[in-house]
Amino acid sequence: MTEMERSWADLTYEALVEVMKRVDFEQLYVGLPLVCKAWRVASLDPGCWERVHMEPSFRIRSETDAWWQPAFEAKVDYMLKLAVDRSAGSLLELSTRHCSNSALSYLASRLVPFSNTQHE
Image (cartoon, rainbow, N blue to C red):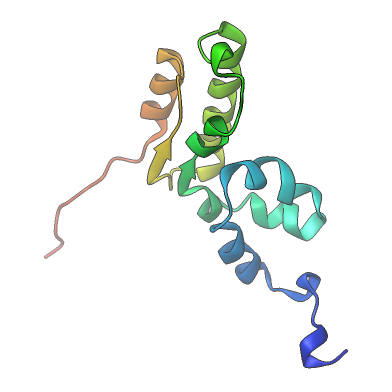
């Protein structure tokens, strides 16, 4: 195999994580983990879940009338909780649409407190 014929399968774990940090939420959530075992493992790295923007996934859907239904709220809550859990405390940004108060409480209870203290 020549230099120009390298495969995505040859990427190191660290390189895969860096790539996955740059894909949209929907691909990270449902697409990339299904490619192969190495991609699934890399997609579970907390670094991939530092910035979670679920909002674009909702903008492209035509089901806007369903956004306020309990089933939609339950789906959003599930995805939010999954993102929070996968971030393992490293979540820095989150954008979503219409989650429940219970999901917000879940998020708040798992945030790592930010400390702005300086060490002497």
